[in-house]
Amino acid sequence: MIPTKFTSKPLGRRFASHDSSRREFLWNLGGGLGGIALASMLRQEGLLASGTASPRALPQHHAARAKRIVQLYMSGAASQCDLWDYKPVLAKRHGEKFDPGEAVELFQSVPDKVMKSPFAWRQHGQCGKWLSEPVAPLGACVDDIAFIHSMVSKSNVHGPATFMQATGFVLPGFPSMGSWISYGLGSLNDDLPTFVVLPDPRGFAPNGHMNWSSGFLPAAHQATMVQPSAKMPIADLFPPGDTYVNAESDADGQTVLRELNREHEASRQGDSRLDARIRSYELAARMQLSAPEALNIGSEPKHILKMYGLDKDNTVTPPKAAIDTAQEIEYFGRNCLVARRLLERGVRFVQVWSGADNGHPRRNWDSHENVQRDHGPLAAGLGIGVAALIQDLKQRGMLEDTIVLWTTEFGRMPCNQGSTGRDHNPFVFTNWLAGGGVKGGVSYGASDEWSYKPLDRDKPTYCYDVHATVLHLMGIDHTRLTYRHNGIERRLTDVHGNVIREIVA
Picture 1 (cartoon, rainbow, N blue to C red):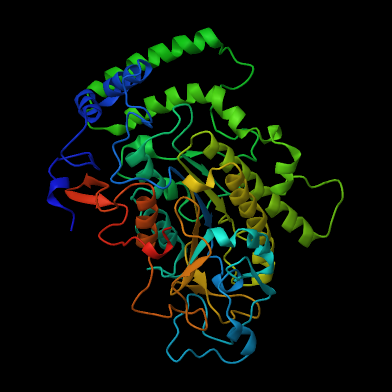
Picture 2 (picture 1 turned 180 degrees about the vertical axis):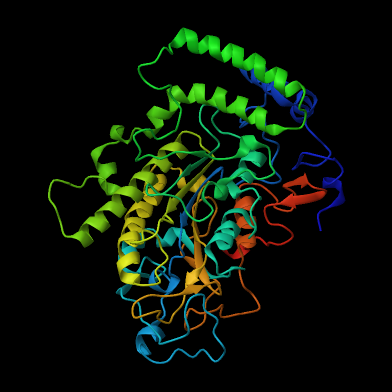
């Protein structure tokens, strides 16, 4: 139940108590573009409190452990029992009939035989965490990571399950976690977006852009998509070449557009789309200077490029399997390095995607046919890129206030599909977190001996609990960050969620 005192206003943010600050009063009084202008002038005059992230940000509920987050999303359902949920029984009973003592419901197939992982396993770190061979580079980071092995999804279908991890709901139309954090905390850098998405270079996950939509929140909180591997990483940031557009004509055009926009806005009160468009134009103008520098990984020293796997010699033609692995390392490593550069420059929330819903041959984690073929290259890219990201953040002193969240929409079954694939498993899978107030070197929850369902079926872990924990670490009480929509006080965690105290340092 949401406390009544946070539902008294008809619209807007339910983030602070009635004891609003002078800054909040001025913001509510000014509103819209006037509020932006007022806050901007106050900040320039040094009249805003020091450390204020943005004129849109309101006081946090408690002291924050983190101020930024990078979410790593493996699209297609990464197999927990082939990456970090080590189950010796799968090797011991390989080839035997899979019988967990109950009827097994599968997405595309019928239960067949127990299938061991195609990858070798070994222990890492002081905590002794078992990792499979493709993600072994993360062994250097396991003492900074909290693994959650009791995750459960409400759907075994990619689209709804992807929505659930990204937005907290299986239905479309709800804001993503990045949009909620943008709405609640505002920006750390007015010259870069608050929320940036780095998709897989080959395409999008199921649901496409809706995974990072602002939903019913003001449109200004939707993500800005950046494609670091593309010729133009940010679409339409600069005018096309060889045109009549110059600095003078561009300024004149912006002036006319500003006047027309304000006339349009005056007759459409309550519609946030135009306000968001105006903000995006203003931000784009500032990004023409800031974004190229932020995306220029060529300025990184050679040892950093090597850390992310971006120092390979591409003049030799290796076998196809090696090409696939090298490509995954380059794609994911580049996105991880760009994510670090964006976080370093004040982007609040960066979402990095691995895997695209683009048919066959698969270039995502949906390994129905062959786990080794699909997971091998993808996990190699994951292992090198994420290990580099965590270690890079740590050596810069940023990991202590940056949350790294790894997720996927559900897991995969311990039995085979066909001869070498695995079907969907919504009943148990793994998430993990590092940095930003997270207790490292621990595992929370557990799956059963098969990695089929939670060991304690009365205590499953849902995305609501992970989202509540992330918000808690960022100084937000998840029950109090709400927005009234269609007569309902909506929140990221719906009516669910508990902070996972066992993984909070």
